[in-house]
Image 1 (cartoon, rainbow, N blue to C red):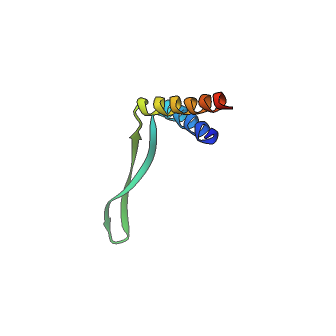
Image 2 (cartoon, rainbow, N blue to C red):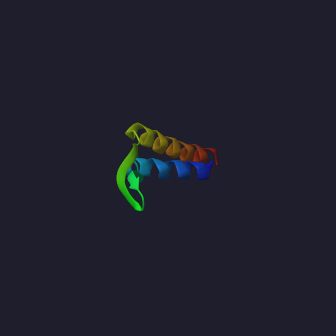
Image 3 (tube, rainbow, N blue to C red):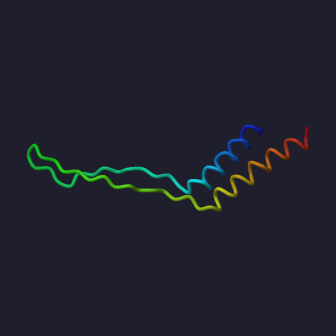
Length: 70
């Protein structure tokens, strides 16, 4: 449970700092013979701040409950 708590705290902090995952998507605009034109688009998957906060709170709760039982 301690490892899960640490992982949740780390993921919560990362989600709150970055706010999402960004990635590049490359698509082909057209291809004629040996000529190929491509475009790169930057896309992102946003994380709501509530998800990061809940993960952080859940991880801290797991760590605190673990200490109280010991």
